[in-house]
Figure 1 (tube, rainbow over the protein chains, first blue to last red):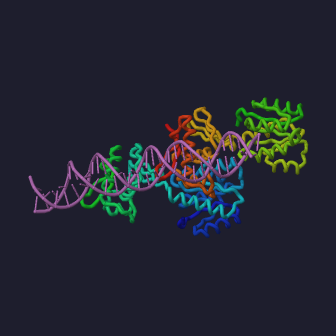
Figure 2 (cartoon, each protein chain N blue to C red; figure 1 turned 90 degrees about the vertical axis):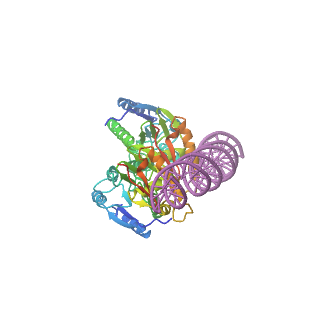
Figure 3 (cartoon, rainbow over the protein chains, first blue to last red; figure 1 turned 90 degrees about the horizontal axis):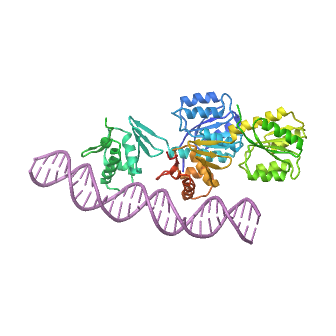
Length: 231
Length: 231
DNA sequence: CCTGCTTGTCATAAAACTGTCACATATCAC
DNA sequence: GTGATATGTGACAGTTTTATGACAAGCAGG
């Protein structure tokens, strides 16, 4: 599977190693930003968003773990995948790094192939299991757990119901035709009756009704459906 | 910082020195076990777990370095801190000992104060770094012994089950895809069916069920698995 | 070479999900 | 109101996904 072009922040003070990383990342078609100081990295992370962070454990300015801890403490960037690199190849150090929130770990010296493999694996994951949290007032939808929370009350939907809600939530108030929904939810190449949408809407409504939001999916006769929270 | 009570294994054939060590360790509130033979020490290390090993380089039965090499090689997971003691205070010998995996080194004769200081330093390090104890409410996972405690009830898992639980516990509530678990638990380069994850999950669940946490590993249909303690 | 334990795979059972249909209701134009 | 059209609803079967038990290969320790 090809991972599309990503932007990777490399925090590493050893120039030769950093260059090596950069070359390999670029060979896979990714953009890279290099940074050799922890405090500078912190600023960069505040300013921009990256798809992956390669973090050396031993860096000037701020220790790697400190940076990681800060990163995980912040809400916004908390899902940024982090690959931690270090010369401390001891098991306990590794465990500690992972506990602090690193998603993977690579010991120095490393094989370039392994670096690439781990990076690609992390990127693959992050694109398939993104933690999207839509938040329309009282309703939260978490793409990662396929769960929906309405005023704290948990609601676990079936895959199709979830996708349907997710799709309609992206444009609250907008009317979606059955054809449109079939395309986005079921996929452009599915052989499914339009009436199937009705059935799924019904099932979704039933679930939502359980938390007092049964009417948030409305029917526009002759047009389709739309989503809007009951006020 | 006060280091809580630890159990120290002293491997030393000179009785007077051994007694001296013992007295000082006990004065700091630690338990000690004395052993004057390398082979016996090996048996003890197999049978029990200690928090620190004070190892004389010159001991009967087995040479100190051999024991150390065995310890580091045999149980790759062993992170037991080792303080090596010897009369051979030459630099190169010292280097050799550290290379073999000793965590610190003390030349004979030694000042009792120095012994105590080094021991305390090692213990402090080990409690903050080595014995990583995950603690999600009632569940404790000890990376060193591969044991899991649930409300006091001990649970010894098989290697794979342990790794699996350990991986999922790092991000409680988060869903891990089978691919993700294969990468982290089995390794990125393993040729294992995705269904194997199911089998291992089943085995892990069975163990957890024995202590009333069978449902803490949940299935997210179409997505993967996640860990979350039953509340 | 045994022996016991771990683990990968497979076949099968069980469960969850979804598409469709038949019919009930609702809405609209006249 | 009446018929025509659109949508709601419940049931059911087929499909997909996961659970489970069995089994053998792999492996470490004797």
